[in-house]
Image 1 (cartoon, helix red, strand yellow):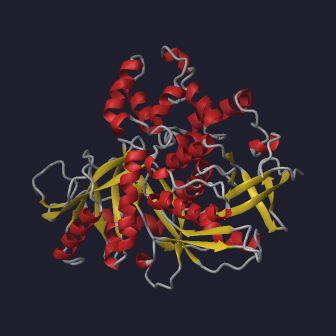
Image 2 (tube, helix red, strand yellow):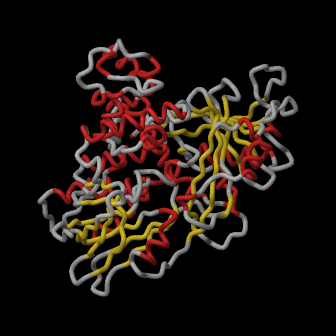
Image 3 (cartoon, helix red, strand yellow):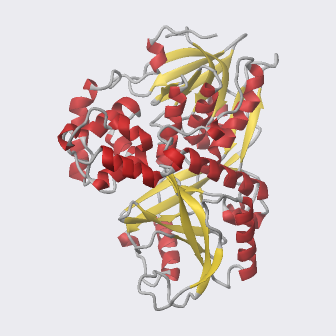
Length: 523
């Protein structure tokens, strides 16, 4: 065991909150280690509705603070990661039996008012042409509303924050589980386990942040041996992917009689994403999956609003995530608080802080991280001030945040690159596309095509720069090509990784915190 390394901060959990916190902390000049028991963003953070939004329906519960904060963060994320976050128009078909017309219109007026930004078109009432052959809606629906929000790549936002943290000096350690953490006189002693080799390592820290999402209470009890002061309610949200239901770029917001709304969103040009459900969950969040009742729920609601009925048999793929919602003893799942709480725990000597993160959502991860570090910095005289609001995420430094102009520049610089591949690279990597394509002059320099435009060059880049290790990491979280790959093609990628991964990564068989192989010490 090693007990030499001392970090200012150890962050437990490699989802969107954990990576956001690690990035903020490292950028303030603190030495940081982030550990994640699986792949980065492999749980709740890659199983969302992919929306960067204020939460229009939260206005019904008078949660104006959360909506206002979320809309402010929506604007910041659109500017800091324009390759991963883009504006989208959302259509709400009106159903007079569910919500009065004036309530929806008033809600949209407030939403526009709180989310002021020139890039977003304002909401308005619309009337549907019932003879429009391209409209997917039931012909009996004659009016509705349209408003603006954003769609984003959740898993790649996690990776962008991990890259930001690493660039600022943080050590990123996926597949590293925190087994225990105890306060000693002047330090935390943290026992880590490599989940591949089962080797154990002990490191030291001055502060800990528990950002384990749905595991937050379990972590407090089993890792820190404490009792949590706040509680979460685990809620399963499931999504389905079906063949493209319509050709327009707008999304639809469908109201359900249970008070929830379901989003129907264009996805990867060929598909439609539909979700989400709200179901109480009991068990291990790693084993969450959709059930048939949820599939029926989503298909039946779409069939109520769309003139072509949707059947469960049409579902191509599904995912489920467990959301850790703050438990305020609300009976209705729809009314549960989507906000977050930060709990500061310090020793009797008022040092060695621990921050536990309860709740949170994709849109508000950055401000959550900033508030967590503001709580922590009084314990570190060397810590700098908040900085993430005005800095682009890695890959997001597009001139004037203009993705169209950036695509045009890429097309000139890499004329030999197929347009479909250029488009995917730009949306996934932004300006990091130049790092990915470094040293290439024609298509042959990309190596073998392992399927659907996934060339060896990109796989090697993901192994070396983005902590990918498995076919699942590459296909479902980093490239989104999993929906295109057949079982045979997936097996081909697995075989390639087994044969070649060790040539490109030092820790192909033994994945441990990089710093544990270094001799750096920090006090």
